[in-house]
Length: 94
Image 1: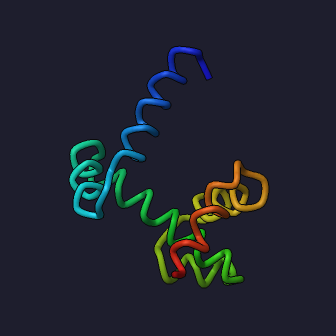
Image 2: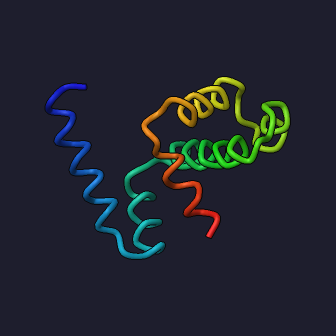
């Protein structure tokens, strides 16, 4: 990652952290992302939930339509990533 990228990323993270309601979050992400990007992120989160619950690839593929490459990528992130999914998934269960 280039140093100039870090400033952009930090600004994005701060913007997300500044949102105070689901409505603000929805509006921000609709402005920021294309529908395809939103769908892809939503699908990855759904796949992460299913993997975390112990579901197998074939069942996840059938239920979500996610490619095996996407499922594998999410699984790698769950196992060896930065811990983002592990931080968020328990909070979504509440």
